[in-house]
Image (tube, rainbow, N blue to C red):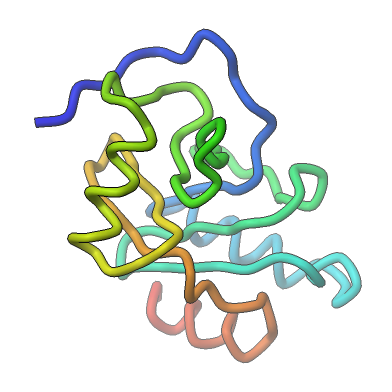
Length: 136
């Protein structure tokens, strides 16, 4: 079992994580944006969770979203901005890479999960259509 602790420093967000109503709100907010603003954003999703990656100033705000960023010194391991595992990030990343087969991974605390990010898709209308149908 992984032990989590509150971070002493909160890095600038480089992504957001949304579930439920927040996930639908983020998808709606993305629909309202110009293609130019969407350029450089990418996303990965499960049936219950959306991860949107990109510069902090381009991430939409929605009630209930939480933010993530790469671990300091371990760019392939993404963590919540306000919490971190008590174990060394480098060792966790290596172990998770071996198990999951992804070079970039989101390690999330609640709900506890690991999600591969190295195949995140660019935010485009067709991807948003598919996600909206899947979340309906």
